[in-house]
Image 1: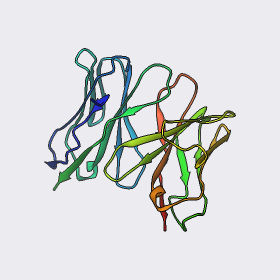
Image 2: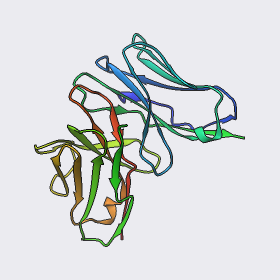
Image 3: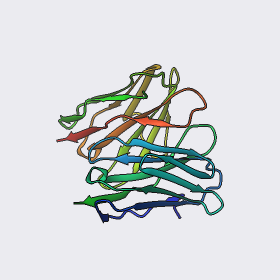
Image 4: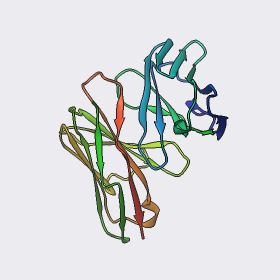
Length: 111
Length: 116
């Protein structure tokens, strides 16, 4: 079993839809959680960073962490074609060193 | 803020030659830099962790003599692929972490290496 599980998609939604992206994990030592967006042939771009359980909102993006269920989510409201990319969840334990990444979910927002 | 520059973005080389990739943190001091490799439609695979002024720590299965990492300053780390072969063709991405205790990694744009 992988430490972090993420559905690779592809996920196709119409413009304006609410998108829900999810990751589950098995390592209870993970304390901080991130979502990165990666366009084709580019490096990942940090979207959201959360520490411990709870919600965090930034514009059209909301990140949720449920440590009791070992489940994290990223919601995108009013999705746009420019949101079409691969979304990677990442998480780490204390010490600020290695991150463990999900495999990434490919999202396509269609006009 | 937190900009990481990676150069070159694309390099083509002949088999047997060496290629150097640079990773620079432009607006912060990176105590730790990371080098990843990514295959098409796959996630990031950590190759090594590089701390300024000390030897890099390589992940299991990564040949340290083939992938030479130097982190001589707080803003620059380099990855040299020595005697490159076609199987080394891949997308290499660096990331940088700022002050000690900070957890966030900021990524460069990646380097596409094609070995002929």
